[in-house]
Each structure stands twice: as structure tokens, then as C-alpha cells.
Length: 66
Image 1: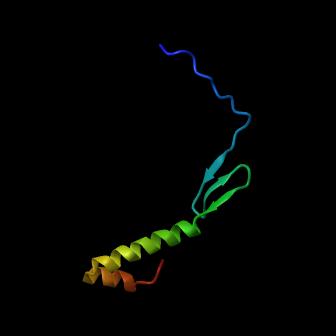
Image 2 (image 1 turned 45 degrees about the vertical axis):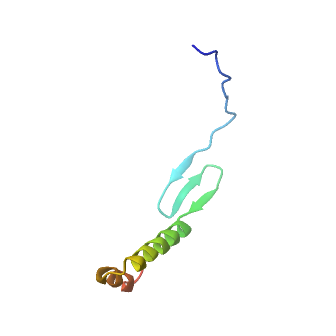
Image 3 (image 1 turned 180 degrees about the vertical axis):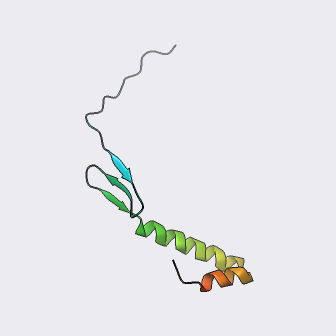
């Protein structure tokens, strides 16, 4: 067996709450908002649909963003 490794002893804990409006909120007060994540997802989806260039893709692009 290998020799005992140096164990890390944490000096505190940080809790994380996962949600919909804010993707993650830590117990220290940091909030990771979902808006930027949703915009990136929409942009990537639209890029993929434009590249596909099918009738159904064009129909999906005409739909208003949800």
C-alpha cells in the first residue's frame, strides 16, 4: 500500500442551492444567473437550425422565442 497521503482539513463549508431563475446560489451570497445561459442556448440552437436549412428548421426559426 502507498503511504498515508496528507489529508486536507477544510476550515468551512459553502452550501449551494440549485434553481431555475438562478442556476446556483451559494451560502456566501454569490448568484449565478440563468439568463446568460439561456441566451447562449438560444443562440446555439438558432445557429444549428440556420445551418440545417430545412423547411421545418425555417418554421422553427419563425416562431417567437419562448
